[in-house]
Length: 238
Image (cartoon, rainbow, N blue to C red; front, side):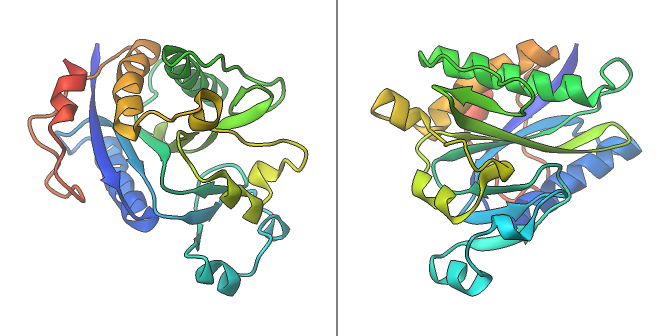
């Protein structure tokens, strides 16, 4: 069974997180790193990201107006359209090699959805897929979004799960290009949101089960990690 190292990075800027995952992916593709596969878990400061299929009209305010609200705008190479990231949202960036037996983008997306559905189930939330749409839904509203990038079958980017996210921020955009669908969060459904690290702890074993990975904690974070891995990384993977 392959080893995948979970790293919880806390709150990290979008550009910094993207640069780190790109470095890990490059080493994994080139086979010249001892770090292997990773699951990066974190939250971002407020940022709107534009995927490869993003429509400018789906960002409802101009950059200057967004800046006054403390929201940055970043273009990215992930798939999908426009989404919002911010505090209270658990973001996951799997850095995996899907070869030789999982080289199917559709399967990869469905597997990420399955991880999220199982994780939400641990908190008593009945979540599901919606036919023809990507992501995870609860009560008819979107609770988690996906947007991935693959190069030589090595993955970057991933998913965003609304835990205690300020949902009003989604009013700044047309989320994922869906004008007729609402968004929700664990906190809205449960009445009180669990902590982000608590959700991360619950997600790690589900990720390992779905992807057939041993979620073994690293002895130390990679030398170029933005911050050192916190103590819970070892506990959650044991």
